[in-house]
Image (cartoon, rainbow over all chains, first blue to last red):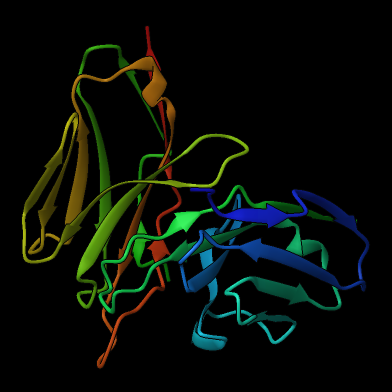
Length: 115
Length: 116
């Protein structure tokens, strides 16, 4: 079974631009979560989608948004990029059985650099 | 406010010895805890988990211990192997009322180096 895939793997943008990152979950998985990893803050939860609906949201500004499609693929968008948005963005998918113990499987991440 | 803390940024052990990675949490609502391993240029890989109703969970060379009263958990790797060298993240989650919660709160990680 193919794992979680994320595209692109690397991205360079300039301040003020916007960016869209894509995540394809493991086949059959319906929950997709996004995380931001930075050296200073570690891994921080952005949001989680299930059946095209955002179920959970972390403490990030409204510049960070996401969506999920009917095939469970997900995108996240960051508008008006700032230098501090440079980070590794990780996507994780899980097969929700309704328990909080469902394991999340991570993709390799997209490395975003903002110049 | 960091709710999950890994106070040791790095740990170095000899091959064959025990590695003990520690994690503390402050939120008493957390009821499920996980350990992930991460190699450079890869996403975190799930290693082992424990529910708050247990105090120990074992899977091969990996054992996680949970001390709820101290809000502390630890990961033991015995015996340690050079291939275990990676960053280890502790994570915690809590159930929302009425359903599941996929929001994981992570510690900042501990870099484990296992020397041959």
